[in-house]
Structures are given as structure tokens and as C-alpha cells.
Image (cartoon, rainbow, N blue to C red; front, top):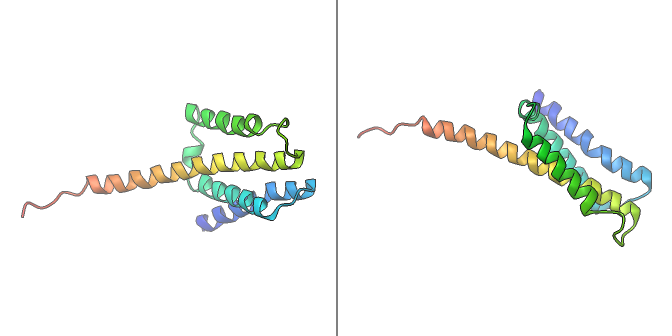
Amino acid sequence: MKNRTDALVGVILGSLPVAVLYADGYWNVQLAAVIWGTYALGGWLMLRQEDIWRTRGNRWSALLVVVAMGASQFGVHMDLPISEKLTIALWFLALGVAFAAAAIGVEMAETTDGQASEQDSYVPSAD
């Protein structure tokens, strides 16, 4: 049941930035689909490993926020020769990709740790 709830929350989370863009009047279907996918995937994976994400005092979490916010706010800034609405859409994209990539990394590390412990416990026979 938890996996189904996590997936549903991911779908809802993915819909939020797309709804904001649509309400703002910017609509590019391809960009909206990618933004939805990154937020949905990131939200789903973050909920799957929520005990890791809730760790307090972790400097890696702070660094993730600094890098994600810096990439979106300073990398895609209002002085670029693109429309303001596209700039906001790219902010959403950069944030979504950063957090989805971090969530994928946590999932990969957890999967690898689980496989490594199984392999370490295997003792071949002396036949």
C-alpha cells in the first residue's frame, strides 16, 4: 500500500509546477511533460527513502539545496535573452532535475548497499 501511496504523491507533486506554469499562461507541452516527469519521479523516490531524507544535520542535504537553488536561480537568470515565462519554466526544470537526480542517487546507493551486504555474506564452499 505504501508504494501505491508514494506513486500517487509523486504524480500529484509532478502536477503542481505544471499547474503553476499553466496558470501563469506559459504552455509548452514538451517542457511541461519533462517538468512533470522530473517532479513526479523525484517525489516518488524521495518518499520511498524518506528515512534518509529526514536525517537532521546532514551537510550533504544542505549542499544539495544550495546547488539546486543556485543552478536554477543564478544559472537561469532574468538577464538571459528569453521570455520571463520561459525563465520560470526553466527554474522549475533545473530544480526538478537536481532533486530527481539526488533521489535517484539515494535509491542507487540503497540498492547497491543491499546487494553488497548479500554478496559479502556469501561464503563459497570448499569443494
